[in-house]
Image (cartoon, rainbow, N blue to C red; front, side, top):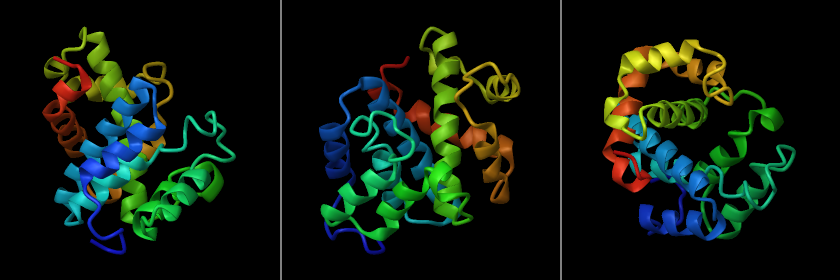
Length: 189
């Protein structure tokens, strides 16, 4: 599992995330991102536990820094390193703020930026369907992805980065299935 703290499991990472993130919407975002990251790891032949934990912890400092993008990621990195979490996860948390660290071509970084951005679009698409994520289809995502005003916070260019590793439609399908699997945890139908 790389240089991650020996013995840390997904549930411990989830507890750590919950200790620092109080807003339910932010927790749901991290859970969604983690589900996509886990699915991507399986698809890309990477460590699914490591990638899921990276997704769970990627915004661990967001409330602490008040959304300050000049500090976001860096504070999270230091928090994780201080808790014995290795560079493989902590470094990805740091680098996911491309505004500070530029565009990394590491597979985990590309995947995290794509998952981070697409998770919001998927949740927004479910909201349009009154929270029925099972009514969101790949075709719905394709349509909403093209509508720049829909889920305007979704940085579509970061989602497109995943095309280095797979077709966009495959990523949509994989991500949608991953979020549908955890719909109960997210309060979606």
